[in-house]
Image 1 (spheres, rainbow, N blue to C red):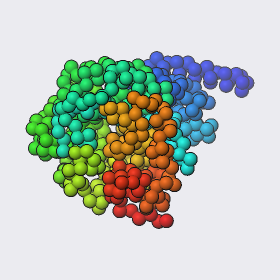
Image 2: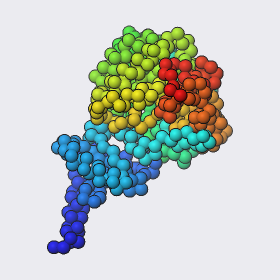
Image 3: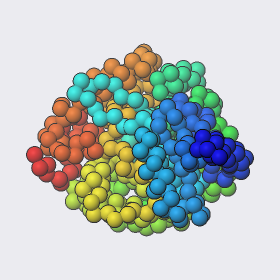
Image 4: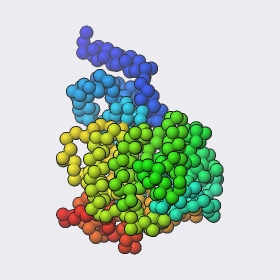
Length: 476
């Protein structure tokens, strides 16, 4: 047999094996393939169980030169073979992403975020202030709320509020967003479940190929509501827990029974099979409970814990005295980073951009962080994303860099979303590092941090000023 015949035989055997693997996919492979074949990730085409060279890869995009491998069982233990395969693929110009099977089963959103980052990396703002790809939108579908939380950005109450977008206008907005990009859409409020057409909106977004998620206080989530969430295509739900027990959480939320209601909502989500995460706003009143809240988060089966550092806007202005100090801020983020290295769930700090500076400062000290749900999401993103890859749309259609930075960048009732995203002067300024002031402007970590623009604005009236709660002194 000559070498040409041997090559043909190997290819024939690989093709036959690949066909068998497609027929006998694991649950994790089936779940990930469902998302990849839908082309929700920037319209990228993937193939599954595909022969390449002398190997069969789990998923591959030839256009993006990206290979995704799922590991589990014996295969995951053979590191030498994995390294040999990855080395060959990288030599051929491919990027390689690896996840445990449990990554996919327990936190598909985190996995998709990591894949999306490889397909379309977070762009660095340019000196010219050119537009960036919008990757995530927080959409305040209503300002009405059934609670009166002390820290509320929106200072929301029961409402009703005039000028909220109609169902048809919501559909039109989704059309405009989908024509521009394929971002994650966070349906938030207020309390989004108070909007009667919320599941029509979610379904419409899902059918347009957008990844729809929801942020709720959890008190209105029943088994029937959880079922509707799944039917409408909502992929993950975040529920806010701001105390380790009913006494502390109810005091923060200013509603007796809020903790019990949230826990009942979580139970309904779990029973329905809906993935959920816990969000926690940190102030001086609950700072000493954050470790207990993290333990609670893990114990109730959440996929992730996201902490938010109080930004004194909305009703939160009354809590300015409860904002933690810069030193407490630094210490908390250092602790959270250390926890993230070995925690089995995804941990993420929001409205805390210098978390990413801390992460980069400590990279050289880390031997090998625990491989966990969601891949290495933190390593592939940056701090403040407002106006760069993220924006906020208010209940009346006002587009802002984020929910805490109430700068009117345009209204979707008057302009298309694309026109606002691409031409807003505020957005263009935020994308131009050379315009940042104070120590943020000269900091060597500006590309991974950027400082909290909302906190700068509240402190100085200038959204491009330096972050007021950062202890770090740049080397420049």
